[in-house]
Image (cartoon, rainbow, N blue to C red):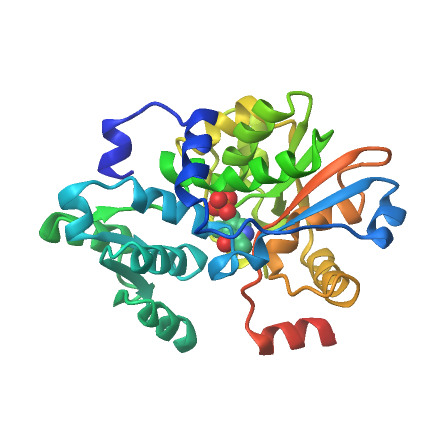
Length: 327
Ligand SMILES: *Cc1c(COP(=O)(O)O)cnc(C)c1O
């Protein structure tokens, strides 16, 4: 947990989502809401796809990262921030830091795809590589934070990150009106927690569902048992959801506001990637397909309902995409 969340143990609220929306306005894209007659016919529902694959940096993570950096004051801005992730959070922090002239240090595994390391450096970040089999990245992050005065910004368990992620659902409901259901993917739960805060405030009767890969259903277990369940790194193509558990902040919000958590298989995710590519002409990464996959496969029944679906990201390597779609 970061120093900041220890100083401020209160959980974020919808007011924080509204404040975050003000900070990112004109900077984050107000991403389009897409519809598909084919998907509506298949489900008997009216589906609204919030296309965060078209967000800056290719995922909703830009919202939380930008908001968290915008909240830093004086010295913290000068010294900069540190984040660890091989995925979208790292890129989002690097990008948001560059836009706000705040130095960023990103801790990445030394076997991360060279393209990803290069892209992170191109956003102006200092990249610190670690050995994922020997080193403890959280320990490296803590050490850099102490030695250099860097503020740690974790990928989901942080009030400003959760509030920023909630702005996507806020935009969606403001654009299309009240929803019967909102469906979002879950890794550490930042997106779902923020979305739930927005949905309960703007559309109080909206039922909220989280979707995980079948191999990594720690969130579902936690939701159903009432305490945080930790698992080993799940084996799934949904790499953005390979988190060991929900967070100390995301879990209580999800537990209080969500209706249920469900899972989908990797085979369903591939079908959904293909659906997005062929029918809706958009590129969505496997993790970004989780919510749509649960709806299109009837894991969450939606007939007759107005349903919001967060399409969380589109960062997929072209070779991986081609391989998955060709099978
Ligand atoms: C990070 C990420 C997720 C998971 O988000 P959490 O806030 O950790 O639940 C889902 N999809 C994509 C594309 C992501 O980058």
